[in-house]
Length: 207
Image (cartoon, rainbow, N blue to C red):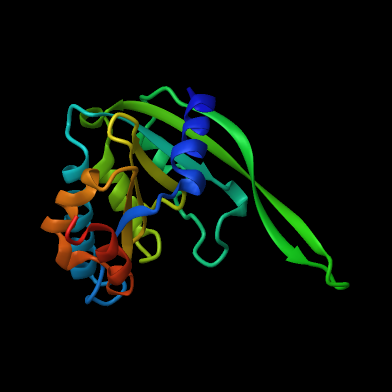
């Protein structure tokens, strides 16, 4: 399953992206750390998730876990929380490397490889504790626990949709076809990130 999903991603969603996407604002205008911000974040992200995926949809949960290589600024104060939520589920995993380019003192390009664990599990949406997962992600940069610092993606191969909540600021839905996200674009247009609105309107408006 893991290798099959990895091959699918490279073909359909290289680098976990697609040119057809919508980026939504979750936290503004409420201040960081406030209860009102967290309430709005979780209400919006669950609404978007449930618009994309129905309870009977079969989806994959993809996890990128850097372990001790995670962001040193925030840290993952509850690193096992995600796995506690998923402990009843079978999971496949392997080690991959994220490659970044840098320059040495002589100006030569060098590659820096950072290892991470890539983990995959699957099931019906109704069997996956997605609300708790999304809430944990919303806590990560807000000083709240339990939090989830791992990157988590939700994938439907049937719909060709990849969904990712990066933190309390926002989330992004990727698709292969415009039709897969058009309803989302129309219903929650007010939530679109202003910085990306021109780009997103160019994808969906009048189409």
